[in-house]
Length: 154
Image 1: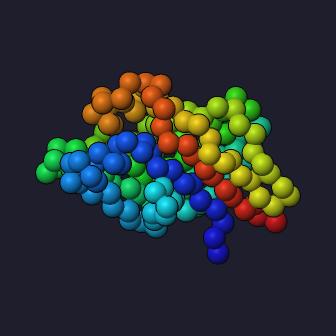
Image 2: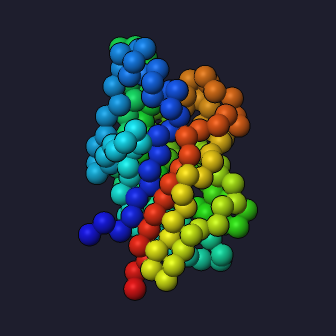
């Protein structure tokens, strides 16, 4: 059963550069997929505590080019959303461990009794993730919007 997903294109110009200019690849594994220019990470768990939502997702995206000199892995995203905004973290291949990648504004979830939806949330690159992208982008760089949907357990 599809309980939800995180849809994110990371940064459109980065994906164009990797696939068109650098002749690289974008591969998905571990349950992640690709759809309409975005990567889709399946929802693994969701909980609500102290006014915040904690969502974990599965799968991995790996971006490679320049015979491996460009090699970026984004795996098992987690999203923490509160009234002030949200933080998206990922496990990485090269830097090791979980790092915060993107910050979203305080966007209210379009929620019903059984569903949560954050649609096309603007996202900005966080300082801890600049190295992940080879310091090509400074902190605060606009990233692709993030969309998250989740079905709540009844």
